[in-house]
Image (tube, rainbow, N blue to C red; front, top):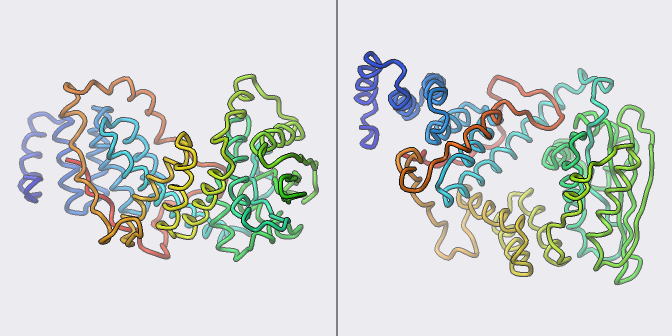
Length: 407
């Protein structure tokens, strides 16, 4: 009945079954699906949550919950349920579509929170910002080689990734900074302004601000400068720098991160130190193309982002993050409805969504071991920033339609 669009008949049958067995997770889910199809999203959530409580392995119920929360503009919950779906589902190919969906929604969530932060700016109390919160601002390219400009974001992203591996620190997401810059109409050069930086730190919810610059000493050598400032006072707590060959760029970045961590007085475990030493790629050109791809994505230029990520992957086929971003950018491009230079004839339609993993797991292996690891995902919060509002916000641009939920 659901497949044929007979949602009212499906509701009647599900209700009759639930009178006999009120705790039947399958028919509770069918109630949720039928209500979702009829766009009664809040009612759908109630049934789907009951179903999921009784059967926490049901990835299909998780997916519909994510779609419900997206439909009512609760993007944070939608993202968390989509992530949970990807951890539970056995359908690897469909994970890419969901991962791309997460990226689209996360950008939208950061846009909303940036607007909300500005509305609440007068009520934000800098004194209440936890002392272990850190924001990494974009670095400035002060050199003559403008082809290195993408590193302004790439270097910041790498440092954010490394600092996020320190358990005692809470690091602000790069996209939160990107959206605030858009709202404040700030250029990259404005981030090092002594008047702008404290305000930005307050809006980001960061106690420490890390900012800096890089420039080419020669065609083969580079220097990176960084400083740590306090949002509350604007005072500079420490400055540090590193210099060396461009070919050693990743080693230089690691050394700089360790210096910054040391200046903040943070003690690292052996595990954290080892994790930070991991490099995403050892190919400088691949990382430069990856950084360019991020910049294109930020601007919504998905076709160009795909091309940059493709170059990064071609240069270093082992560059896992570039591969992941490439797949997500391709899916985001399809969902946005844009045509692509790499897809002649227009946008290719996504493959039909898979059925529930529960229905076929006997043939491909159980997923029960993964359920417990995701039990806390939905209650997990985001990095420091303004509190999330519960009422649907005003969205500046409509999101593309969500993919059809799996059957």
